[in-house]
Amino acid sequence: MTTNQRSPRRTQTTQLHIDPEVIDLGVGQPQLSLLPLNLLRQASAERFAAGEPDFLQYGAEQGDGFFRFALARFLSDGYDFDVDPDSLLITNGASSGLDLICTLYSQPGDLVFIEEPSYFLALRTLANHGLQPVPIPMDQDGISLDALENALQTRRPAFLYLIPAFQNPCGVSLSEPRGSRLAELSRQYNLTIVADEVYQLLNYQHSSPQPLAKYAQQAKILSLGSFSKILAPGLRLGWIQTSPTMALELSKAGLLSSGGGMNPFTSAIVRGLLENGGLQANLAHLKQIFSQRVTDMDTALQTHLPGANYQLPQGGYFFWVRLPDSLDTLAHLPTAELHKVAYRPGPYFSASNGQRDYVRLSFAYYPTEKLVEGVARLGRSLHISKT
Image (cartoon, rainbow, N blue to C red; front, side, top):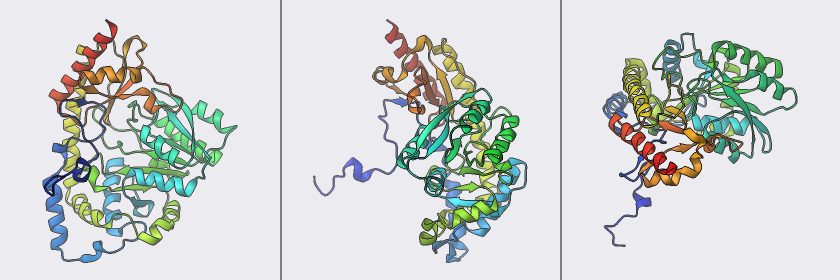
């Protein structure tokens, strides 16, 4: 290799590397053109122009106080209840929040209750900590609380992990009566609940259900939030919302004592967008774009996959589609890829190797014309499999 040549690995800057001829409908990331480069450029310039270098120092363990105050105001408006800045701990995104919770609240070999299906990369995080997932079934109103309570009568998990709003992958939301009852179960069984609420503010058809974070003062609830879905994943910025007591407990982790609070640099920049309305405007723009894509992808599915079964997403990023003829979506994936289309097969999201006739399709990464073509390719691949 000459000095002017670069290997792909050395020049890699983003997580994804998709063959440009392939439409990967499984990608759960925002489209590059939706990332607000100019908005963040302006916010960065304003922060540097202030001439205050504090945000380049080790940060306060719980997160910058001014940032938490601005975030609390933003969440109070979005959630329609008052959020206490002292109930927030800043993280490097929701994933680092989950990892920190696993470190502090579990030991290898512990059980963790999860929804069936569940977010496949969260399952990987649990596995990295040596935790044993126990699937709890879901229906159209979210996790089955009868099944959960039956499981709690005989087993004690380190915590319950669930995605209450616009669940990844299946898109359903926990009904408000179930949310209230779930908080009661948390108190009754001393159950720690980890609520991954990163899609909470991305509602398209109706208002979002109340987040489980609403009950954090009454029960052991740790709500994960993130700017990855509503601003930009590369910021690596998120939060845990809980009671002030539990937030203070989290802030005493060795990781934070040694390295300081997570991401003070980015927090300082995003703070400006919270204060000047830039984030609110970006969120409104995303909701407009994604709402139209839901409509367009629904039309494409009806046209090219008329035998498929799914629920129209009310928010979030995904369609959870049951393909016809009990097709094994994991086994079919190579055939689909020959037709230059990809997806995430159902078994990825199952702790019991189930969900085999389901696929997760995302509308976040591609514009409408690519989404429609991708669904058409998927339909053609299914037709080939039948003949």
